[in-house]
Amino acid sequence: MTPIISLSHVDYAYPNSDVLALHDLSLTINQGEWVAIIGHNGSGKSTFAKLLNYLLAPTKGEIKINDVVANEENMWTIRDMVGMVFQNPDNQFVGATVADDVAFGMENRSVPREEMMKRVDDALTEVQMMPFADREPARLSGGQKQRVAIASVLALQPKILILDEATAMLDPKGRREMIALVRDLKARMGDDLTVISITHDIDEAASAERVMVINDGELIETGLPSEIFANADQLRRFGLAVPFAEQLKEKLRQRGITVPDEYLTTEGLVTWLWQSISTK
Ligand SMILES: Nc1ncnc2c1ncn2[C@@H]1O[C@H](COP(=O)(O)OP(=O)(O)OP(=O)(O)O)[C@@H](O)[C@H]1O
Image (cartoon, rainbow, N blue to C red; front, top):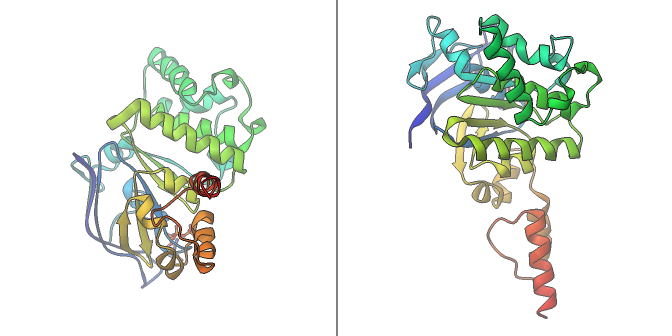
């Protein structure tokens, strides 16, 4: 496994604040991983994301992206490697059409026209938005807008895609489609794409390969989604939502029913319930 993101004893304090938004953060994320970052409001998740593409500079410690130290001098190399999609789909558009919008970042980086046209087509195809290439972005649904935002990032061929609450403003269907899209992208691109999902959405976090929990600016837990989400007491302690299936398991246990210890998705629990009822 090759590390693509490494943080060593990183602190960050906002200029107008004497509180550390992040404190002594040390971690490694490997090339091709899909990592979810969870934590209650104000725990430092967005600050972490902004440090990764040098929108913010660490107050202390060192960040390396693909072995390049994040600093003033390497800022543009870092930003070329780390693409970000934010929460509000309406704040991410600059072009008159979907295709213009995807082309915009490449125009800024002087990608030759022919190469640019090809990358626009490829990126829109990846996110299944090719039929919308000539549409006005403002007229798309929230989920479609976020898919175009992902295409704009993919067209720049980043190594890392950061989704900073990118599903938060979508309806459940849009959210499911985004998660499915990221899963497809990961399956197709393998180690060529590392994904960081900063999210409050349990389904999104559970789709990742690894979950990191940030609490009050510190990394307090990292593990498989199944390990993190099966620990309801710990989730509550850190102000996080407990998955529906885990809540139901707790209630069943209180009634004396033996339930599986391992984490189950809602669908997994439904299947288990059916099986245990039908064998009684
Ligand atoms: N521009 C700023 N100036 C000063 N303090 C800030 C600024 N932005 C964030 N903070 C503070 O830094 C801490 C971490 O904030 P951050 O936005 O990274 O948390 P978060 O986990 O992303 O929260 P949320 O889930 O609400 O988006 C919080 O205490 C917040 O109040």
